[in-house]
Amino acid sequence: MIQFVTIVVGLAWGDEGKGKIVHALAPEYDMVCRWNGGANAGHTIYIDGKKYKTHLVPSGIFSGKKCIIGPGCVVNVDKFLDEISYLRSAGFDTSLVKVSPKAHIITEAHVRYDNYYLKEKLGTTGNGIAPCYSDKMMRRGVQAKNALPKEFLWDGQLSGRILCEGAQSVWLDIDHGTYPYVTSSSTLPYSACSLGFNHKDIGRVIGVAKIYDTKSGVDPEFPDELWGQELFDRIIEEGQEFGTTTGRKRKVNWLFLPKLVKAINLCGCDRVIINKCDVLEKIGHYRLYDEGSLIEYGSLEEMKNYIQKVLFEKTKITDVVFSSSKDGI
Ligand code: IMP
Ligand code: MG
Image (cartoon, rainbow, N blue to C red; front, side, top):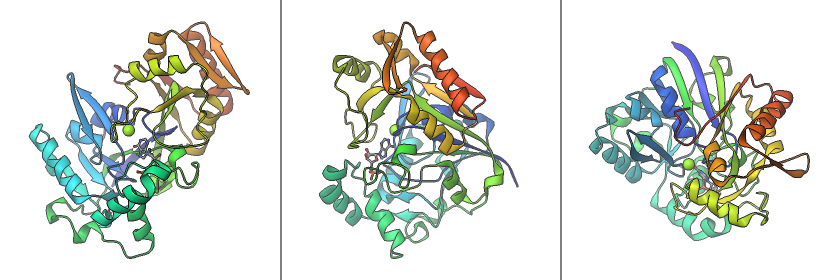
């Protein structure tokens, strides 16, 4: 029996630090589940000063929780098995990782097509994501039940306290993002129901944002102001804004607050965590876009107060937490 479901969702273009939040929450849950995407995601997690990277396996693995890769996900078998060996040799119990028999399999042809036709044009991660989802929709795809060793297949049971880990984020969503510069799955909380529960089971939605914006890959709508370029380079350095999956330098801009408000309202968040506040403190500049202009604050405190005021006014959240790179939450 499902006790309750919590969903962690990214409120921008990915890379907000969802993995860190899921890792901090996981001890209170029984299962940690991914509902979308594949190895295009990248989570970086620090445990006792050691850095771990995962692409497909939910961050619950680091807390010894049952980890589910749901029917809406896409799996590259070689990459999956490599990640399992990497986690096993690092001492984690990989028998906890299960994949839905209905998840779709990324083939070599998918990866080739993505790299040849889409990577440059759309800035994809080159993991074969779009061609795989395309074959799924054409109903000619290969499902995990026919491609993965039986030991990894999930029996479909959800029980206890369920934590869902979003991959990619609101502005990469196939329906709500800047099509075609999006990913090929649904990144919004409602699509977590594809794991096998219904919307009434969802207890809490936790949105994760960053105090500045970043984007990996192409997006003509990403506010791409050149003003403050030297500061953006410092944000990239201080915030280590390089893709976990591709190693690409991310594009940076000041937080575009109206988009954050929209993302929170689309997702129905109860609580929002705003990460990496320490990065702005390190560069000593506190700016965001709102009401059609760039606003500068004298201190981080002043900027936080403004953000909190706007979010309480324009969304239904009851709590906003400002977090630094090193904080658990
Ligand atoms: P794809 O998901 O590889 O097809 O890439 C489509 C777009 O989503 C590109 O702009 C990628 O940079 C972006 N993207 C996909 N996954 C992630 C992620 O986990 N973090 C940030 N950007 C991502
Ligand atoms: Mg990432």
